[in-house]
Each structure stands twice: as C-alpha cells, then as structure tokens.
Length: 331
Image (cartoon, rainbow, N blue to C red; front, side):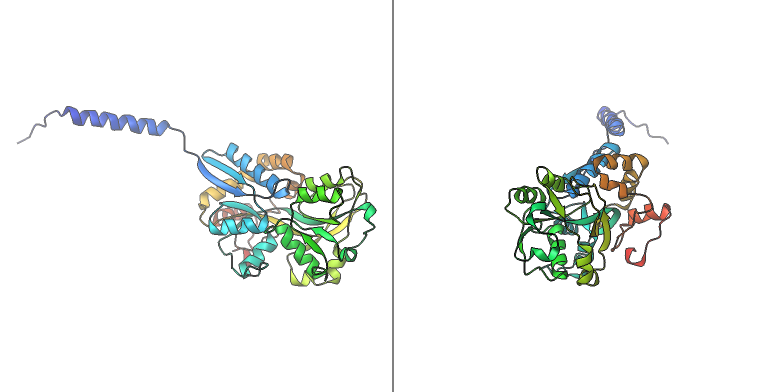
C-alpha cells in the first residue's frame, strides 16, 4: 500500500529559499583572508620589502589581504611571528639563529615558532661618518656617539655584536634612534657616526649624504682582527661597490647578515606554497626589483641562502620542486 504525501507549502518555500541561498553562495566572491606582515621602521629596507611583498600578494592573489606593519625591526619581528601576533615578517638570520638558542641580547627565551620561507637579500653594515670629522677607522670611535638603531631592532643587535667583537662596545656612546633620525642628527652634528644595517642602496644613507660629504668606514678588517666571525658564524664579508652612494667613490669592504622572509608555523602549507610561488614568479620578482634594488639578489637559485632554521612546509615543497635541496638545519 502506497501512502500519498500531502503537499506542504511551507516546506516547499523553505526548499526554494535554501536553493536560492546556495546559488548566491556559489557566485559570491571569496572572502579575503586578512594576514599581517611585520616590516621595519620608516625609511628602512625592511619596511620597503614588507610593503612591496604585501602589495604584490594582495593584488595578485585572490582571497589574500596582506597588511604591512611597521616595527622596530628584526628582533621585534621575530617575537611577533613567534607569538602569532604577525603571520609573516623579515628577520635577520643572525637573530633567528640566536633566538633559537636563547642567546639574544638580554633575552634568554627560545624562539622556536618561526619558519623560514625564503632569502630576500644580504644586509651589509654601513658605518657612516662625516668626511670632515677626521674619523677614518673604527678604533677612532672610542668615546663617540654612534646611532645604532631603535631598541629591539636587528640593527641595534648587530651593532652591539660588531662593537663587542672589536672591543669597542663599552667605549662608544650608543644612541638608540632610527635610521632617518640618525641621518638627520649626523648631518646636524649631534652624532659622530651612524650605523645602518640594511641592503644597499639605502634611503637613510642617501639622506645622510644629501647636503653632507660622508665617509663609509671599512669594517671587515676590524672584524677579522677581532672575534666577530668566530662568535657569530652567520656573518660574511661583502663589498658595497664604489659609486653606490654620492661621494663614496671607493669599494667598502664590510660585513653582512641575510634578511629572511619568515612565517609562523600556524600558516597553512598550501597557502605558503602559493604565496612563495607568486613572489618568485618572473612577474613577482620584476615587481620587487622595482620596489628596491636589493631585491635583485632574489633568484630561484638563492632562495635558501643564509637560512639557518627550519623551512616552512609549504615553502619547502616549493623549493624542492624547483631543484633546491634543504640542508639538515633547514629540515
């Protein structure tokens, strides 16, 4: 015996409404995923890269809304990403290395929730004085005021490592101010030297050279004679070519760290894979080359240069698919 179902107008109406909502949902745009990228102080190479990466990824990838956050720099970015307060950041390899071991300056905490995505550029040390100061070598800075970067910045941390390595940290007067402030103060005679730790050419160094004749000190020889390279093996020798800055018509042999793009381990591996691929596409690299000349160091072959920690699973997939082999420390 077959039972005949009665027509229920309310049930039919509900079915029509659900079908309509489903159709609307299928055609609705994908909601953008809000993400944050921790950069650096105004005028810094970190901030230029952070803004460039955020802009490129937000405009080129559906469903990505990436905001650039200003910060004091490398160490603050390490802490933000480790705590989940930022999804991405730029951190010097040295700070990642020391943070993993709990050996950051005055900070015994171990920062283990940070994963590498890619190498961005080498960050050389610039130590700038006015040409008329009579200062031609590092040892002459004893008793002098040196702007080293903001408190909590990678620049300030690297300045301390360098000056400790050459036996001068307790002999200089460190001034904890940012690059732009330091450049202005140097030009006004309120400082004796300015330490800038960033890719070249750097906006703040150009600012210091605007209206002033500057001198960049040679740093590598002092570093080799001291303990820097033994104490901090992630530093390397690099040359800032003659003509990079106005009036500096000689090569500057200095030291450098590697600026790394890092991510929190909470980031979805497929999303990180897609973001890495977007930046390292020909279009992505061409865009970043227009943002800053230092981005010319970014190539498929250099993608893991200077990486001293575990690589994010999504980025690891991208790099291995493109022919790179992860070192043991990167796995």
